[in-house]
Image (cartoon, rainbow, N blue to C red; front, top):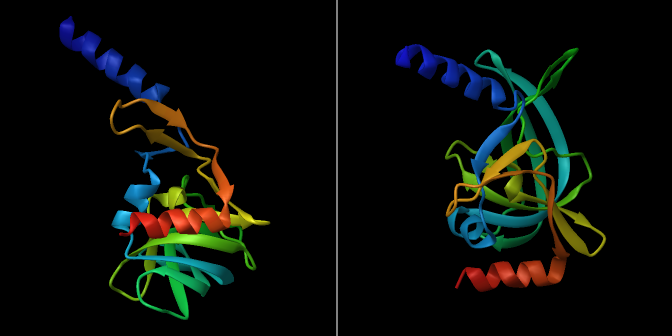
Amino acid sequence: MKGKLSKILLVAALLAVPAFATTVKKMDLQELVTVSDAIAQGTVESIETRWENKSIYTYTSIRVDESIKGGPRRAFLVRHAGGTIGALTLDAPGTPKFNQGDQVVVFLRDRKDGTFDVVGLGQGKYDIVGSDVMTNVSGMTLVEPLTGRLMEGGPADRKPLASFKTQIRGLMR
């Protein structure tokens, strides 16, 4: 009887998990800065979606307007799962969404193959809106590392661009 009850509770717990959400550790700015190989302010130049290993991947080219961490570069090629090819869309909840022409600040990890990942999924992409930056972690459930508390993602953080970059530089010392 005890084994049957455990199985029922396990099934109930699995059904309670959102079907289309990604759960990741919440990263504060210090951690984003520390684990990033590169941080840059830039402009999204192009977006290309490809079939690879029986799945869909999106490649986003970001022209560097200002390098904040890492050596000087002209551009970064960011790779992430998901995208649309023809009528087929693969949605990877929590991955950052880019649009051509977007102004962004990105926290990147070198994949050592010529491409980069955005650190912390959507947590590592900030959109520049006027003179501010804003991150959006919609589609993600964030786990607070110290307490284990779960938080649903959404528009998470908005601050002035200039002070944000100053804060990043201060955390690199």
